[in-house]
Image 1 (cartoon, rainbow, N blue to C red):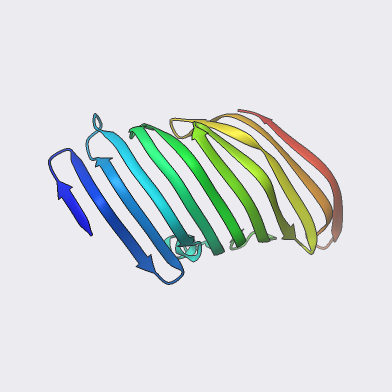
Image 2 (image 1 turned 60 degrees about the vertical axis):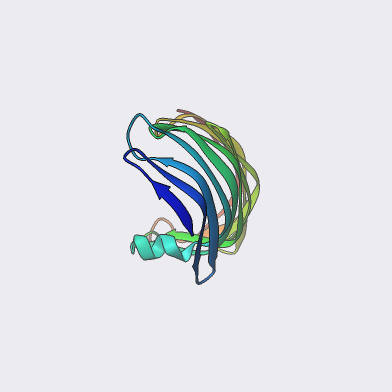
Length: 173
């Protein structure tokens, strides 16, 4: 753990955060004022259970492996790198289904996120995700994602069991 702090930036030579199922190394500069820039490198593995611990209404488990760089202004950061989801489970308490066994890659290039060979299970069936999104200043500016469903079983609407096979295209902003 080695860092230097001044009024508008935090300089990290190398900081490693370690916890159960988590080990992340950070290095670079974190701007603390609106005018200062980011120059941060992030590498490591994060237990997705931390998301559920931070927000109890969500269900999350599995691992995300990160290798990325964050540059630019805090208000509109330039993200580059990748994240690999391994055996992830994502859900929300009170919602009728949970996505399990989610595996695949997310690629970050400036303001674009690309989903590559993402697949997971819902209701015993398989979901595949492919496509991307453009993010600017915290909002989705463009979306082009294809979701293919094969033998997905849902209890929706209440009292009815539905089996879904098909494709859904999400496009727009």
